[in-house]
Each structure stands twice: as C-alpha cells, then as structure tokens.
Image (cartoon, rainbow, N blue to C red; front, top):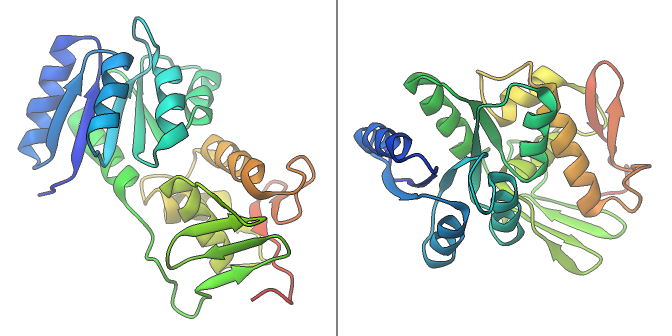
Length: 233
C-alpha cells in the first residue's frame, strides 16, 4: 500500500471515476481535475507525488499543461494518450513528462508505470562520489542539487536519476537497455526515445554548448557516456 498523492487530469468523467476507484483501492490518495486550468490551480494549492495527465483536452491541452507544471515543479508526470505515433509520444516526453501510457490500458500496466515514475535511485551509490565538481558545475548526489555557474538548475527526479547513474559509472559507455532499467525499472529496455529526449533536456540545462556536448556523450549504436575529467572530484 502507498500513501503517495496522485492528481488525475482528464476531461472524461468516467475515466476520472474509474482511475479514482482503481488507485484508491491500491492505497493512493487521489484528487482529480477535469481540465488543464483546474489542474494548474490544484498544483498551486496542493502537493502531489504524481500527475496522470490526459494529452487531449479542451482549453489548455495536456502538452501545454505539462509544460506549465514542469516550469515550477519536479512532480512526476505520466501522460495519458490515445496517439500511437512515436513523434506524439516524444512530444509528451519533450514537454516534461516522465512517461506516457497509451489508451486503452489495463490496470496492471498503469500500476507498473506509476511505480516506475515514483521510484528513485538511492541518494548515494556504494563506492561512488557524493559530489562532483567540474569547471562551471557542481553536482551533489546526496542533496540532489546541481549548481551551474553559481545558479541552481532544477532537474526533474528522472533527469537527476539518469544523470546520477551516468556519473556513478563515468567514462564507460552504458547501453540503452541498462540505463532504462536502472532509472525507469525492469519493465523498460526498448524505449530508446526516452533516453534521447532526457539526454537532450539535460544537455540544455548544463552543457556549455548542448549541440557539441562536453560531458554527456552519445556512443553510437550503444548508449551514452558521462565524460568525467580525471581531475574532477
């Protein structure tokens, strides 16, 4: 059983009702909203651990709602979408979502996605560093803070967990599947688009030149590598 608080955002009353009943039975505390405007108001007034956000709603759509939430919050977000095209799923991730699930979906799949979105890597890795200092950046793996040029940069929990795992295994190529399973969970492994979007978001947040990265390097056909200078500590 869990005490995590979940906000369900969908314009269809039946879906909200079913999700409230299903998730409440699993021990989650549920609040719902019928549109993006109500969701933004709820996020301003209450704390949530996760948001289930429908992508196709009247008024402020799901993507714009996700962007606005993400601009001021690190809450986990799963987009609910009826779209099958990869570019639409990538758009959901690029808007700031941690994951997406395609309608119609079954309860076991939904619960697995929620567990994956809520899971966090341990704050410290055995034998790994507690913090890393680079030329213009400091990453504290214990407090989960990233400072770039003296300013704190907000990372979502999944962004930080991905960065954390790469830093815990520096200077070696880490395969896509291993990264996905380490950060999202054992049910993941083929969703390479997740990594592509999240790596790009991380690069924009702290690479001096995101188009020519210094630290977060792509290993073609393999995965990604964090290039950690030997002088870093």
